[in-house]
View 1 (cartoon, rainbow, N blue to C red):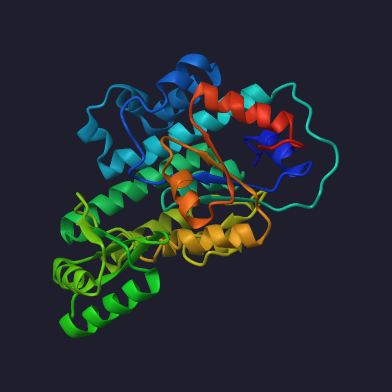
View 2: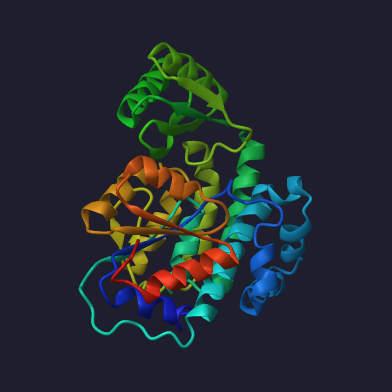
Length: 343
């Protein structure tokens, strides 16, 4: 398998930069999310056209025109986000052509990480999955999750103002007391945790969390209980698709959602992709691992700026870059040109 983004790896692996590339998950999509990039960069336009060909339907048109309710459908939102992020990566690659990488290497760490669905995009960026295989996998992931949600509807809610450890303890107590299903789905940043489960477990947990002093407990407008045991049927079926997909060692380690530790072997990556459907996304711990490993710059490549904002809460001293517009691409390339003055 050839690495699709050799220039990105060349520039980030050389010099004094200590960088983590971050890729957003479901919820960051919106109609028109890469219109400006597609208009400015033929490489981005080609990425979207390639997605249409691979998937057999006009995903690019859905991203451009909607309707929004169709784009946000799990089965469509997942490949749409992966395609949009790859379009950004290809635009960045086209800007890097002719730019000399800094000679030498400082030995500084470079990682990739993605929030839930974004983990697949991270693997494409790292050369572990091909773009085509990544698209097919996330389309199937979205289909299986939608099917599981229809068969066993669930709920999710954001919990603000309590720490993850306290929330996890309350969820555990509620499960024992009610027999319902509820667990931490996403530990996004200090003070922002998402829980997921069935109605019995969720309603009891939401009441208990409010009683425990949560500033707010906000039900999310979803029917799919992502990152909970309700996704077990989808995880079993997805594991077969993952097993049938070629996965090679990534050029740089992936910081895994479920363990918040770096993975580099295909077997570890397969296990992670299967486990994260029912396991928790440990985003706070993942980013703290990167900071402790020496990462100074966190680069969000995808629609919106959700992960950049979370990073501000996790470590206010980390430098943050958002790359999802022509201006953002050029600004990031300018930063690469001047690593001695990264601010």
